[in-house]
Image (cartoon, rainbow over all chains, first blue to last red; front, side, top):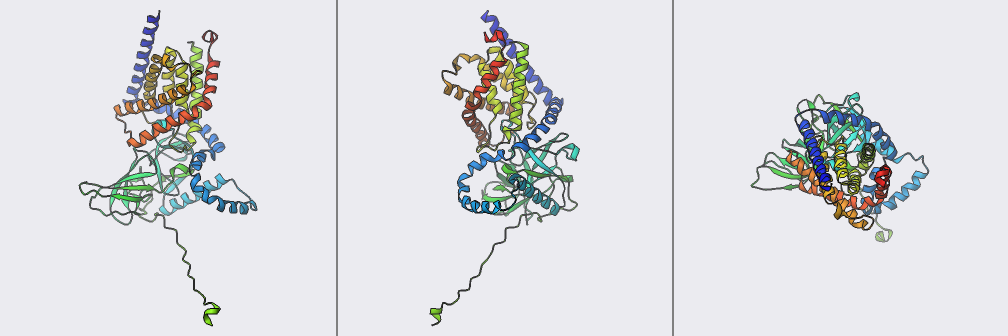
Length: 304
Length: 173
C-alpha cells in the first residue's frame, strides 16, 4: 500500500516537473503565454494597486524612516520649531505636498530638456523575490506610453519602461544589476557605460582608458537612436571615486545616482525625444553659498 | 485531497499573492525585501502530506510566475517550488511538530524560503539569465531569510487557521 502511494507520488512529481519544463520551453521558444497571462494579471491588479497606493502611500517609507532615525535625531529640534509654525497655518497632507513638489521639479526638468512627457505616480514596487528592481506606474498604453521609453524623476534618470498594460506600466530601475546605459561625462567627450549594482551605487566603465575622469564629474545619458530606450542629456549620476588600474583597458569609477529611487513617488515618462540634444543643460547646479562679510566696528575703549 | 480543497487553497494562495504584490512589496525594508507569499507557501507546504506538498508547490509556483515584475520564463517558479515541495515531502518527518518546537519550525521556514530563492537563481543561471552582482544576490537572500524569521510568527497562526478551515471533514478526521 505504502509502496503504491510512493509510486503515485513519484509519478506526480515527474508529471509536475515535466509540466513546468514544458511551460518554460514554450516561453523560451516564443509562445507568448506568459505575456498575455501577466498582462491580464496586471490589468486586474492595476486598480487594486492604485487603491492601495492611495490608502497606504505614507506606510511604504516607514521602514526607511526608521533606518534614518539616527540621522533624523539632530533634525528633531529644528522640526519642533517648524511644527509650531505649521500649526498656525493650514496643514496640507504631507505626502501630497511632497508629491506635488516632485511633480513640479520633474516637469521643470522635462521642460528644460525639451522632452515631451507623461507624468505618472508610482503605485507599486516589484517584489524582491523576482530579483528585479522595478516600479509600477499608473500610466499605460492608453496614455501614449510604450515599451523602451525613458523614465525620469526630479533628480534625473530613473529607468526604462519594460512592459506596458492598458493603465499601468512596469519600469526597470537603473539600480537593477541588468541595467546598462551609455553615458557621457558632462563638459567633456569622454564616454562610458554605467551599470546598476543593486543599490544607489553604480559602476562606470570609461571606454577610453586614458580619458580623464575625476570625483564630482556629472554623467549624462548619451541617448539612443530615435530616443529609445534613452533620450540624450538626462543626468544619471555623479562620480564618487575613481579606480585607476594601469593594466586595465577600461577605467572604472563608482557613481552615485542623482535620483533617490527608494523614495520616489512621482516620475515622468519621456514619450518624445527633444529636437536638439540638451547637452549639459540639465545638470543640477550646486546650491549657491551665502557669504557673510562682517566688518568689525572699533570698540569705544579702543578709540580712547 | 479533494478537488475543492485544491481550488480553495489556490484561491487562498492567490489572495496572499495579491497582498504581497500590492502592499508588502510597497514597503521599503531597511535591507532589501521580504516575500510574504514565499513564507506563507512554505508554511502550507510544511503542513501538507506528500502529494499535497507537490501539488501546492506546483500551483504556488504557477501563481508566483504571474508576478508582473518578473521577466523570467513562465514556469520557472513552478519548477523551483515543485522541487521544494518534493524536498518538504521527503523530509516531512524531520520537520517535526511545530507546536512542540516553534523556533525550529521558524528556522526551517526561513531556510526553505532562502533555498527557494537560491534554486530559482541557479535555474535562472542555467537558462542564461543575468543574475547580477554576487553581493546583491546574497543581500536579497539574506534579507529575505531574516525578515521571514522575524515576521513569520506574526501571521503563522492565521495561515494555520485558514488552512484548517479549508480541510474537508474526512481530512480533519
